[in-house]
Length: 424
Ligand code: GLU
Image (cartoon, rainbow, N blue to C red; front, top):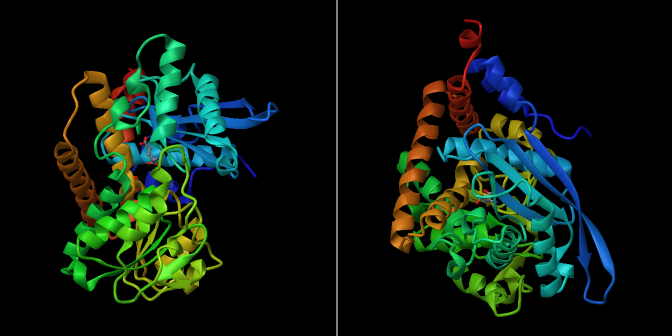
């Protein structure tokens, strides 16, 4: 399989938006890819050597920005694809960042907390030469969390022999993290959903939601959606799913799962079914529920051409990165499903990471209300631009979002010197 090819949709956008040849060439492959072997000393004294990557896809708009994923399926192709999406996400939200991503091929749940700490520090040591506040700023992603980002920030400061809080985002608040960062992805997704619902003249109480994925993004989203009056009727995690047609209050379920926040525990061990009294259903069954909104908050390719035809929700909210494969996207569009795209819907995390970067650089910290207010303004603005553009051009929201992002990058590329300028 080739390392990475830009999606066909981007080619369409290049044509329709008359994107310059320079930009097309620059966006056709990543700026920089680092592949490393990270040695991990296990608690029993043995040594594992793990494969790891950091990819800076495009840095036209600023330093690279994007999370680090610890997962057994991570490979060069996935990290590159995720870095590509980060490039579009940051451009769409008008953040002064390019796009990057990192990952380690590992099952972190099979490691002890001390082993995870050594891994986090080892990863930073492996990529230290290419990251930093003005180069590339890592953040949490799948199976990385504030505690892990705190270790990473600490390691980077040690390597540089100076305090470097702006080199990482998603840190614990006591180590210079931002208020509101933990709930930011879920909060941003809810703002996008609310904006969409308002455009359809619907009220939250009329809208039922099923949430696939109950980690940090999906869990916060489900709780906030419930509090905002949406009818959250089902949630699932990597173990199982629960359903309650009347309205399932996701808050105690999240609380129960998040016993993982207890001192010394890095990952949740419980499942959504551990809070009793709910009907358990299969995870695939959740995807097929007759609900108004299906929120996909787990991993890439939750919906592929294999299960796309079984989806009944008219609206799909992409909280994970790439949860709908390209061929499933086509099937769903043909069947008139609306998909609100990942680079818009899940951009709240990257946006509050930007706020954290500002705070870490200036040393001036904001209150939670200030963060929420600024996040709200940025998400409403981005959602409005995407929805207006989709309407004006009569294209799906994903295409509109790609066009807005790529046009912004193209303007920056041209401002740095374009063909006619050099041709004299
Ligand atoms: N990993 C998150 C994402 O995919 C956050 C990235 C960041 O905060 O830089 O958007």
